[in-house]
Length: 201
Image (cartoon, rainbow, N blue to C red; front, side, top):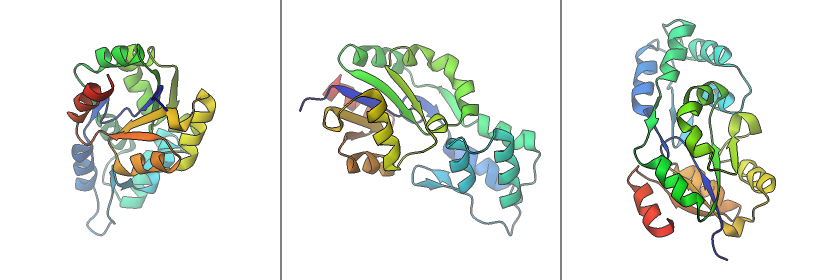
């Protein structure tokens, strides 16, 4: 069947994020005996997942991260580092989304927290206004690559998996979408978005 619908990730696809810098800042605050702190495309610590699923507030997240990894920082400093993960929308993405919206039904599907959403939403609003749906993990109570988030997005949008393509920068999230029958395009680097536009735009 032809592709009619696009599910599109946000961070690393439409919006730049600086995972490396964020991790470096958190790890620099760890006590020497604290465990490994991970957040990235291949997986993440429990507290990041809890925040993305809307299970904890940003303050509870900061306190939990501080206790788990013995971070030598205040709650406010831990939250600020998390805010600094977000960078601007990639150049040309707003125009690209408008172009894609002329050809496909569009929806966002993002692992994100309510806290981060409040920061980037004003800048991303021109893109969101081109989309039929904005699906976020904190609102859905489940996160990628859990099959349930893709299934819920398809059900709520009324889309068929075989008519839908999913764009994401995380390989494990791509595999999660494939498992429920959705077509995929791996945005391995930001430049791969341009290759996707050549093929589908």
